[in-house]
Length: 274
Image (cartoon, rainbow, N blue to C red):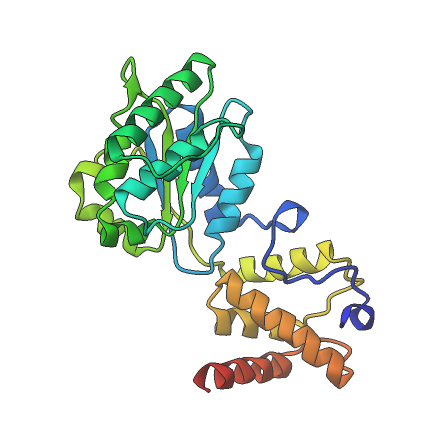
C-alpha cells in the first residue's frame, strides 16, 4: 500500500526476515556459532534462550539453512505440549522416510524402538539427525523433559545419535536448572539478547536497504525513539516501523520522525488496552 510513496520495492519490516533480510546482531552471531559447533561436533544437546521477539526462530531458520547436507533429517517440534507418547510418535514419523506410511499412534515402546532403529540407520549413512524443540520452556508443564533426556541416551560408541536443540524463553534456563539430570547433558548454552541502540540503527538501515529504500527514510531521532520504545526487541521494531510507514504515507510525510513513532506507539498501546 505504501511502497510507491516511499519508493520501496518491498515492505522492509515483514516478520519473515530470512535470506538477505536477515540481520545478525553480535548476540545472534555468537549464538549461531555455538549452535553450529554443537551440531557439527556431534554434541548431544544445546539450548538457546531469549525474550520473546528477539529473533530466536529466525536464528534457527538461518542456522538450519547453512548446515551441511550430512545433518539430516531436521525434525522441528513447534508444539511441545504433547504428552510423551505423542511426542515420541511425532519424532519417529519425522525421522522416517517421507514415503513410509503413517499408521495409528504407536505405543511408547514401539516409537522408541523405531526411533532407535532410524537413528542407527542414519549413523550408518554418516548422517546426523537434528531435533529442534521450539517453545521448550513449556516442556516442564507436560513432563516431557525426561523424555528428551532419555533420547540423549541413544548413542553409538559413546556418541549421541542425534543433536537436540532446545529453544525457548529465558525461563527455560530456570526450568533446566530444576532438571539437573538434563542440564548436565547440555553441551552448549546460548542467550539471544535484544539489540543495542547501535544495532537497532543498523537493523533499521539494513531492512530499508534490502527493501530498496532510496535514502534514509527514518531520522536519527526516529530511530532513537524506536529503540527507547521497543527496548531493542526486533518484533516491536518491525511493528512500529511498519505502522509508521503506513501512517506516514497516509499523512503525506516525506520522512519518519520521532513524533510519528510516538504517535503510532500510542495507537498500538490504545489498541492493546481496548
